[in-house]
Structures are given as C-alpha cells and as structure tokens.
Image (cartoon, rainbow, N blue to C red; front, side):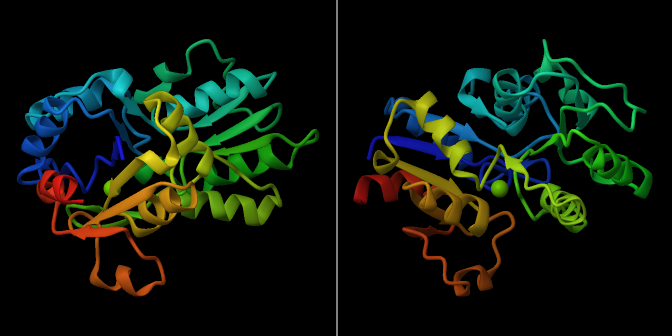
Length: 259
Ligand SMILES: [Mg+2]
C-alpha cells in the first residue's frame, strides 16, 4: 500500500477539538512522504476554511490536498450540465462553484440541475418543497447529491445529514441522484486520480461504517475504521468488515508499520 485517504470530521477532530494524537499521526505521514489526501463529505465549508481549521489543531494541509463534495460537484457540473443550476448549499461554499450559471434563489422552474448539500437548520418545508418543484418541471433536471452521509455527531447529539433530504427528494420526484461524495465510487475514483495511486494501493481511514468503510471497500480500497467520532459499537454488527479497527487515528502509524 502506498496511499492514504483521511476522513476529517470524527477522525482528526470532533466538536471543534482535535482527536488526541491526530496531529502527530498526520505529521508522521507527511514526514514519511506518504501520498495522502483528506477526503471529506463536509459540504458546509470551503477548502480554505478547512485548511485553517486543521492548522488550528496543529495539522498541516494544503487546499489541493482536500477533496470535498462541492469541489467534485462543481467539476461534474462544468462537464455535464448546460443551463442554470439550483444550489441548495451553504452560502460559505458558493465560491467553489465559480464560473457556473446559478438559478435565481426564488425560482421554481428552469433548473438544469438541482444540487443538494447539507443546509442543516436552514432546511424547512418551503425550501425542501422548492427543490421538489424544480425537479418536477419538464425537461426534468438532474439531481446532484453532495454525498450520502446519513447523519453526523454534533455537540448535542446525532443530526440528520444530506442523505435524508436527498432520499426524500428522490422518492417524491422519481429522479435518482448523481452522488458526488462518500460513499459513491465515483468520488473515490476522483480521489485516487488526484492521489496517483490505484484502489488496491490505497487505504481509507474513517469513522463512518457506511460512507468511509463500505464506500471505500466497494471502490476496491482497504478501509480502516477508527472508534472515534460517530463510531458506535453496533457498527461492527452490520455485516461490513473493516480491514482493521483502531481505537483512534493516533494508532495509525503503528498499524501502518506493522502491516
Ligand atoms: Mg467522519
């Protein structure tokens, strides 16, 4: 193996604090000059914010070494869609869609694609129904999902993530979403292309049994589950077998050396 993909939330940090030992583990990977990329389903922040957040935890990263669903989606929209795009994404990330024609934020028709990200508390019936109305117009637009993460762990407990809203829109409109984020194999292929390694040479390190472990394994990668972040003991009873289970990312260098 020669390449590493690190999930961010729940692996390197949690609730605005670094996971103990995460900075040392990433520093070790950099010192060993192992090809690595940060592969996150975070759709609420642009890459530059993530670089600064990581720096605040003592973790060094460059914007180019972070792949997020908005970046992958913007690339996909540029090559697959002609016409205005309706964005249901946090304002902070609009900069990632530079050069793409954006539909007026009140319009209920005329979208060539509808992009669904994690709006968190900004989701309400009117907003979700506007996405639905756009999808029901002829010609039917494409539906783009920024990942299919089911939920995440916030300071006050688990919270619904983008998949719940995408599933509702798919179900109501009959349109299957193009997923640009974990667990989609296409997102892993984007990451491998950027890393320059094959799937068989690459390991994903994550806390999400579905998005990180099942997603990576289905794309042909190895996958290491860490018992931090959203990990719950019953994750290991769902028929998905991680290639390794580590107490946290702090144990990653030892695991890598012992393989
Ligand atoms: Mg995570």
